[in-house]
Length: 219
Image (cartoon, rainbow, N blue to C red):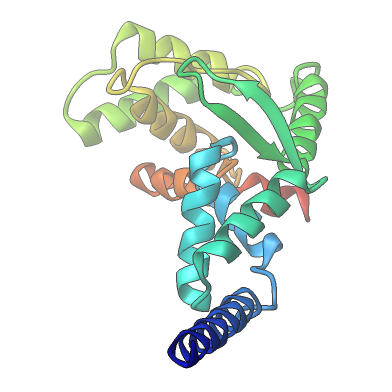
């Protein structure tokens, strides 16, 4: 009986010690992971993101903060419950997708501005100036632009708002270079703008000064 009581007391002590350790582990990282930084990091790369993107971004921040798994789970739940995030539903790959309220506000402002710009023709260029820019680019590139590229350049340079769509490698960036040459020759400052910073950096390949829409809208 004495040995049994001693063993039972040891089990109780070990159980109490384990409970204290678990409690200590839960309280090890009392400060929450910074939601604002996590949301900002998510939208720096893309305007719309998946649940797994939230986990990945939170995990990177947790690693920097030396947080633990429980903090990652808690922070993801806090992100999903936050009024700063918008559930956009399911994409074609059956992924739950989200954006931030800030990003949605920016895109709505962009649409309103686009509707106004569509009615403004103050930035139209003369055909001779557009042809001159195209010829200058063709000499620089040492190959002619396609009919579709030339049509795209004229379409954009004769309206204040237009859209160029095409697959990768279709020549959109080359067309954009001709537009830049045409407008800069007339004394305009030309800037490239995108929603996400990563896409803005890609504009450097066509010699654009790049900005993000959040930066422009904050001016």
